[in-house]
Amino acid sequence: MDATGRTSGAVELRHLRCLVAIIDTGSFTDAAHELGVSQAAVSRTLTALEGVLGVRLLHRTSRFVAPTTVGVQVLARARVLLAGADELVREATGGHTRLHIGHAWSAFGSRTTEFQRRWQEQHPETELRLVRHNSPTGGLAEGRCDLAVVRAPLDLTSWSHALIGHEARCVALASDDPWAGRRSIRLDEILGRTLAIDRRTGTTTLDLWPEHERPSVEYTHDIDDWLDAIATGRCVGLTPRATAAQYRRDGITYRPLRDADPVPVHLIWRTHDAHPATHTAVALATDLYRREHGPAPGRLTRPR
Image (cartoon, rainbow, N blue to C red; front, side):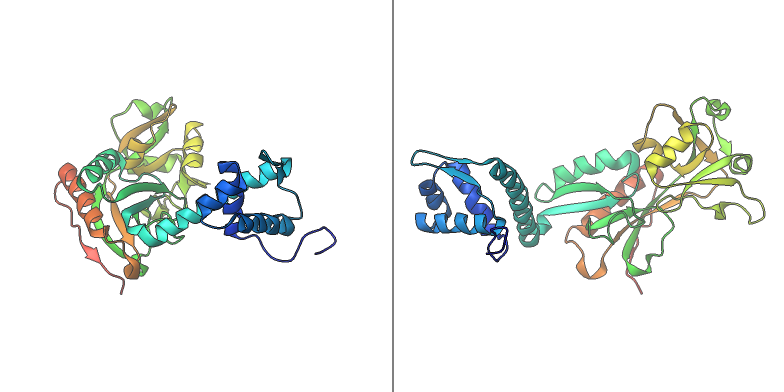
């Protein structure tokens, strides 16, 4: 035991489960029954936890147990930690019952809801979760998802990937901008404006224009920062049509952009750790893009 009254050792999950069981059942006896151990073992485990923390966690009498003020705080944290541990076990032992698809900005754009509904109808055994993550790989490199929707220029050689379709570009404007009343805008007209560009996850680069003739630029950090800059009227933005579908915001108007190549849309995933439902997701996404724009390649590619 040190000067603070703590005993050597570390807090273990069994300590926390014991504390939660005592509070939830209301007694050491019932907690022992729930945990499948003896009442003496419950008492020893709680004493060990109090020794590690150096604080008293429960008021105990012959009639009731109740947490101390510190015990309430520890109990709340214990529930969070135990829930996280349980989630870790579920994902490790049954991770393939859930599919996480990451994206930096717009998921599947206007097709997102249809993708979710058809997935639920056709594959109810695999829960689908869409995860927005502000990184070039939509969270794949960070381990946040099983596969990701990617539109930004990206070196795909490190990932397996499939081209699922293309999206036309549009111009994002402040709603009171003089261009907001037009039917479309030409690419060369952007040269006279300040262009908002998200270098981290955006799809627009200055390569759309000749090197000697490019617009002025204001760089932003994510989709919200990009939209805020445009809403002020000081910038315009170029983006795939999916952004217009996912981010309808007061003060922002989208108009079609002419004379620019469409944006390719890929699904990417880890080559040596592919989720079993990867190719099913690719097929569904490709079908949704094909229905709207005609045949899409849907070609699967492994890194070289």
